[in-house]
Length: 146
Image (cartoon, rainbow, N blue to C red; front, side):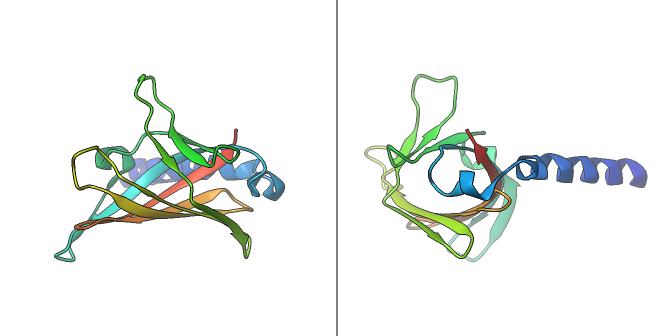
């Protein structure tokens, strides 16, 4: 049983790091669109309680594209209703690509939030932080050139 857990943990680590194997720093400089996969999310409430979950369980798409020419994040889904968020700021600094934006969420609901994203230019590792009025999220994942 312990061996099976170890095998699954190794397989998960290999899967999570797969995009990093063939990533070149130049392709993560904002000159090429990226395909990103959010994987693990940590959701915190105003009481300080935090829970770890799969990204999909906090309503994140399995994949999203970063379109640098349109300055937009776009959910990659089969649905006709493609969610998107405008990128307000892009900056490369210290081997990382930083993106920032804010999103109103669902019209008529007070669910807007601000987000910040960092992508390691040498590995494609992704970290997103987002906060709204009563919640905060930290999301870990990976990106690869599209």
